[in-house]
Length: 446
Image 1 (spheres, rainbow, N blue to C red):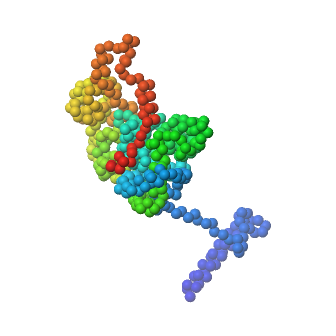
Image 2 (cartoon, rainbow, N blue to C red):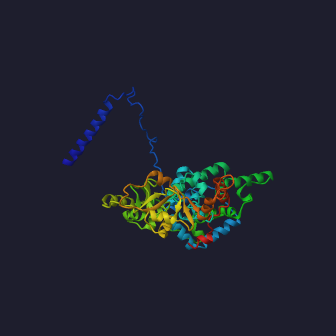
Image 3 (tube, rainbow, N blue to C red):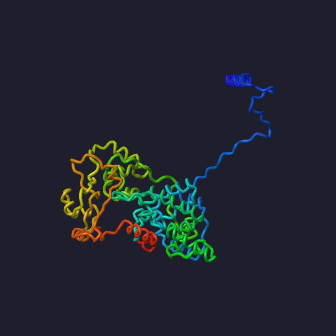
C-alpha cells in the first residue's frame, strides 16, 4: 500500500512539473505551442539513424577498402603475382618487417585522400627495409636518390640521413607521388616517373604523341626495370586483395599505431636510449634508421620513435635516471686539412678506431671544416650545437691529389684534378636516370 501511494505521489510531481513548464514564460504562440516545436502526431515520429562504424579487423582489410587505382592486367602482372605467391617465406619476412611502418603510411595516405595500395610500394622498392641501399645510392624504405632526397628536404649529413627516416621519407615520397600524379594525371604514369624520372616519362609520352601512338603506361617504350615496376605493385595488390586465391597467409597486422614520437631531451648514445626504452638496439634502430651513428644528437634529432607501450617506459626511466652523462660520443670539427693519423692523435684515438667510427677509407685526407665523431671526455659538458648537429659534413680528398696540388696548380692557377660541383651534379643526375632498385632475387635472400 505504501508503494502505491509513493508511486501516485511521483506521478503528481511529474504532472505538476509539466504544468509548470507549459505555464512558464517561454514565449508561447497563440495556439499554445512553443516556437520551433510542433506536436508529434502518430506516424510522423522518427529516430535519427546512428552511423554504423564497422572498423577494419586489421590493417590489410583497411588497405583493401582504400584501393582506388585502376587495375593493370597483363602477362607481366600474372608472372609477378605468381612469383611472389611462390615465395611465402619472403612474403612473410617482408610483411613482418612492414608491420612497424604500415599504419603510419596508411594514415598519411588516407589523410591526403590517396589510393591506399600505394602503401604497398615499399614492398617493391626496398622489401620494407629502411636500411636498404641500392647500387645507385638510392636509400631507405622509399629508395630516394641523394639529389631527389635533398629536393624534398631530406637532410643528409655526417650524423643522419633522412632518406631512411620513417616519417620524413614517407612524407617526401607521398609529396613526390602527389606531384607526379598532378603532372601526368595517371597513377601508372606517376609510378613510372617515380622509378624512371619524370623527364624520361615526359619524353616517352612526347615521342608517342609525335608518332600518333597511345600514351598509356603499357604503350610507352621504357627500360625493363620500369616496365616491370607497376606489374610488381599490381601483383602485391592482387595478393593483399585476396590472399586465399593465391594460397597465401599474411600475418595479421593490428589496425592501430605501432610507434609514437618521444622528445629527445639531450645527446644520448643509441644503446642508452634503447636501454631506457627497455627494447633491443636492433628494434630501436628499426624505428630510427636515419640515426646511423652510435650517438643521437638532440639538436639535429629532436625526437625519436619508440614502440607505443615503450614510450612511457622511456620517459619514466629517463626521469628516474641518475646518470649524469648519457652520451659517450661528441662531434669535433677539423680546424684544418690533415692526415687521418694526425687527426686521430689529436683527439686521443687510434687511427684504426678513428677510421672505423667515421667511415674513412684508406689514403684519404680530412678537409678543414669536416665534422667527425670522437669520444666525449669529462671536460666536454655541452651537447653538440645545432649548427654542427644539423649541418655537419665529412669532406675527404685523396692523398695523391693533395700531393699533386701541393706541387703546383694548372696554368690558370686552378685545381684541375678535383671535379667541379657542376660535374658532381651532372653525375648525380645521371645516377638518378639510371636508378635501379633492388631486385627481388637479391631481396629474397635477406
